[in-house]
Length: 382
Image 1 (cartoon, rainbow, N blue to C red):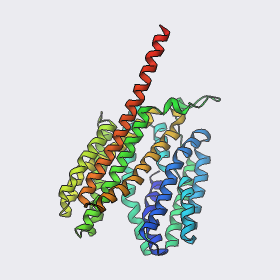
Image 2: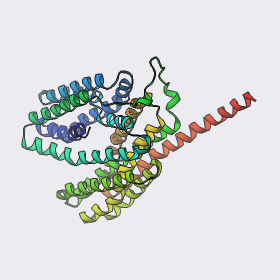
Image 3: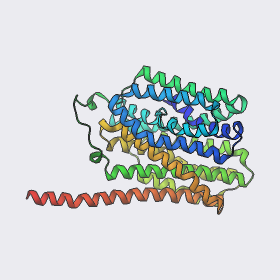
Image 4: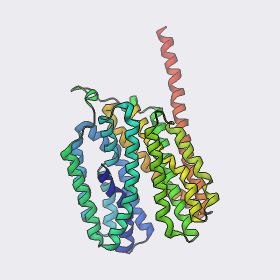
């Protein structure tokens, strides 16, 4: 699953560079293609997850692997308009490596050890982001766009084939439903608490992508773009260290509190944006909480969703995080354009907190609606 994620981390930069350099378009045009892929992934994740719940892993991986391979082999031969049109369905049918990895871990790992497993998974995600974008930039800069994009398609195809052959379990033996069992209705498990968890996840990714945008803007405004790679590497390393600690301790902080720390620690970063090494140092505390927050999110979703619908629930988690990613970049970018990079960090933290607060309010509202109903039911029995 680590190797299946690496090409996913390469897609954003390679598509951007291809549209800008290969097709002679602007960054705005490249952003439209990237947004179409992201929107497709967000829309498709719950549907793909539900299909996995119903038909199993192999049919879905086969279809998604073939479609992803076909898109990336065709991409360098498409016009810009055709690329935009194909990007959305390609996102819908992309290999769901992230949600699959979490489902497989839930099936293979006992409940009491899942925090450690999810933490390890998040650490590997950080490692893939340290490798994938740099490899994508090096490949498309040193090789042709056709070779690079076709190479990404090949990696997607090979990893999908390996997953298909290995066919890891998505439920353990205790979670297998008897034949003919009715699937739990959506309203029975998509509770206010689960919706709050998903909104907190969206706020987390809003905060994280906003922090990256603000960091790049701050380095660029002070002429320190050359240090970007080192700063991003230190941010990823801090997140990995936080993930190791989160997975090793007996009891960790809940998702909501971790996300609150993540956001509160990033808001004041704008007070120390230069020199570059000081910015790098003040970014370490918030990134220490990054992997633990993501791991706690997965742990919460796996606990709240019944095993029979875990694929759909993990797909909803993917959808919420991608929507947070899609919202974070333009909102924080707008704040930077109309103020300064320092305010971008504040916008990242406050925007993430706003989404998390919306989740909390929704959860409380759902609870208040159910409480009178429960009381009425008790009175009726009496």
